[in-house]
Amino acid sequence: MEGVMVSADSRIPIVIDTDPGVDDCIAILLANSIEEFDLRAITAVSGNVDVRWTLRNALFLKERYGLDCVVAKGAEKPLGGRASHDAGAVHGKEGVGAYRVPEVSCKPDSDRAWDVIYREAVRAGGRLRLIAIGPLTDIAIALEKHPDLPQLVDRLCIMGGGRFGNVPESGNIAEFNIYADPQAAARVFEAFDVHMAGLDVCFKAEFGEAELDDLISLCDDDFLESLFRHMRDAWIENGLAVNIPYDSVGILQACSDPIVSYRKSCADVIADEASPEDGRTVLMPYREGRNVVFEGTEIDKPRLMAMLKKAISKANKAVEAGRGVL
Picture (tube, one colour):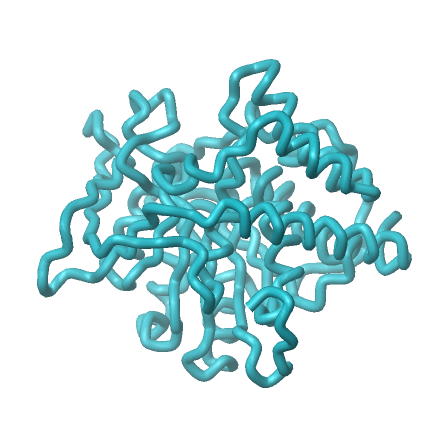
């Protein structure tokens, strides 16, 4: 649907539950540039870094780029009193690499994330596409408080899981977003049909140095430029797999025009702190009676690249127009 004018009434209402996060910030700006999306809310959960930073980063994006949505605070810690795991070593202490975020003046919504998610689902009348690109804690709490949520959501899209992992502490059998709160993930997979951008499909979108340099060259906005530089430099200098636009792949699952291809599967999440497989997503062929996991298998990478370039252009124009913090 890119390049096609979409009337306001026909746009797809979306809520993004996220833990910004270098690639999360890029993914949010990507979502904001897709004409068919009506971004209703960003809900910030603890994950890549503590929720005080993920919330601050989401508010910064809203203010800097003039995002027409609410921002709400999500969960501070995983369910069940589990120890928190973060990815500050990858994303930087405050989640945005070395960039120094200025003080923001906009405030979060008076409702917490789980109630905002439900509120927007009701408001959308069954059309909401809920995109979760961080740990699934907020979605699980929303389920507990509002058991009818799955019936009100048109599509749940997540970035998480996979047939291999990226968390060294797990022996690389668990993916970070699932490992950060396996109990929440297990509840979500039991309640929803899920469109899943796991590591398998995300790695097919990996960027090489020349591709990242191309994106960097288009950035007039110093914040967005710093994010792409972080993706490139942390990968080249430290061997971190941050040259992969994980969360942008997660966002694209909500598009009406297929950009991600799937196979029909089902999944169990191992949520047992005593198990060496804690946090692992066990994917298997679909069985009747199970919730469906639409498991991402392929990504139209040229379209992803073109859409990111469009997002950069829109972000440049927003900052140039002085719509937010300069």
